[in-house]
Image 1 (cartoon, helix red, strand yellow):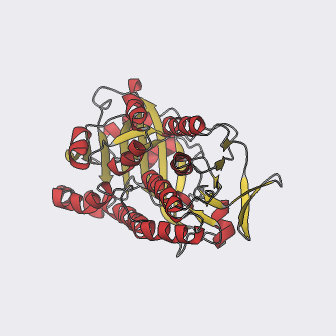
Image 2 (image 1 turned 180 degrees about the horizontal axis):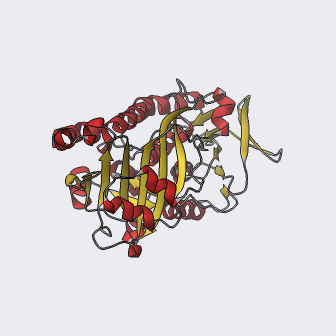
Image 3 (image 1 turned 60 degrees about the horizontal axis):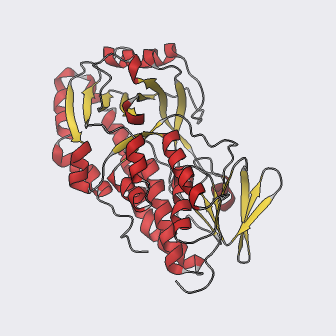
Length: 401
């Protein structure tokens, strides 16, 4: 880094990836402005899993202790059979994650994580986070990045980062329409107060229920006081890609008819179920153009079946900050280094997540004669290592930029 002034960075989107990037940059002495469309910073109330590779970044940023305090700490992750409820331990989490990977595996309520990140950003740079500013487009003029808002106003900086999620206006301005394809998968979700569940279900354990054509994931949140529920169903009659569309208990129960009583009990305990369509987008050949780049769901949205979507955005934000610091005023070189460090890994997560759909929904699970052998083969220790080890061992502080 030369003695030249560090570039001023604009970030569109105050979600997990945008705030991680902001905090990483502010701590390195960059001037940062974050523009978030929400008038009050509140994430959709859903769960997020943060494996050791994400916690490593938060440790570096000095917020790991607060996250550990607010999170839930599942003891293990189980695979459960959709109709019999039979359980297999797939992973020991907790202390085993710390011993193996150096950091814990935690599960969090998204609003809690967002609060911790926004508090840290605001403390480090008061006024950097600007709410109620909806980005609608951008352009590069000479050496300047221009971010455009829905009220006709603009903001200017040396660099613009599009961290504005799956429906990114920044991505659309750079790369045009996003060619989203409906996957044929619909997701139900809800968050249940733990006190509303019977003791057999109110456990500090994550469970993946697997079955023909659908699956369920449940895990504790917020110091173990909430249970997150996500159920994914193969259906072709729902195309709405919004996290906040309300659904009915009756429709949700119908989608899991014939499933184990524990699943029915969980569904009935959800205060308000929500439903959304899962769509796939093809990876972009390049994320950056001019003075503008992308991170997280804006450039590599992934199906949620490896539980790495949020962690990929966390890694992106941290590595982008490292690249901008390393290359000084040569923004093009910084963007090239960032993409080189991230593209192969994030593409592998997108592919691995799609592959897990087939694994979780396999027709072999429908036949009692083949179901048990299928689970024992697919979730054998060597298979799990192959699928997860490369993700959890990644060190965002050491990747060359």
